[in-house]
Length: 423
Image (cartoon, rainbow, N blue to C red; front, side, top):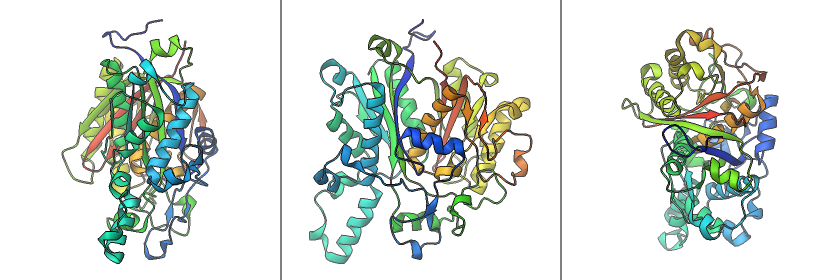
């Protein structure tokens, strides 16, 4: 078996995954819910949503970080960091790596944790305290709890990784960028193992109000389970969500030397800018098309090799339309032969965490040969005619190559090409 790619770079495999979403506190529960077509969207409980126009969200049920953080540590970390640490612990466990890295393994392991907003809940709480009670009441932990790089830093402290360590904040493209950049770090020899993931916790009144003020959120408050409707004519905005996804990436040689079983392989990554509008995608999804083509070029594959796309598909009118145009523009005459899914229909839009979560789901899709459905797709957009969007019911299909798309405000695009692991 070749341990390197044709250009001499090490092959990079995924050996561990961790995840928390509205469908459950781990990969298994989330995957089971996705395949069943179950919605995790419900009325917000994190705060009283009576004053906001969008009162629904995808909350992680029964989240308990005590397996990683003690009570004092929980008080000193924002929820987004807690989600990231729990997902990272799950990923390390599945990969068969120790709870505390030491020696050469520690030096050759890095961590990238992305996010859209970082410690947004802490930010809002501490500003309110400053206004209502005075600046002398602001917590000394305000800044280290709120800054977006703190999850990556805390993960290194907790798990002992001494390699490259930083955050990526590219809005809703963050999770895809993190996995791709971790892949590049390993390929260029700066690490042998990378924990790559992202986390988001934004369920506070001012943050939800901010997205609502943009008219970006669904207001289908009387039908939470039916509110997120990617590619459906009735879509009226995205449903905000929280969660985390973390992957262990390592060279194939390192994985084989320690007897680890790969879950899949990362073979390509592309990143582009629309340079068009602060929130709206470029017409025709041209920036996204360029990201996928670049990822396929690095993978030494063509568009004809792609069998599945995990779509960004947030359930916004303009975003979904541009992605449908992107699918047609990318695949041309064979667009209808590519199976597409939009899992935000079930877990909501986890913003910066979405790309990492969806990369994990895409790997599981390839491994199991089961495509989770796009639920609530009852009346497809006219631009969806002839496309296979996996409406409402999961579909079995053996596949080898898939693309996972993530796009962010600011016109930032990421695309990952993933391959089913096959000895």
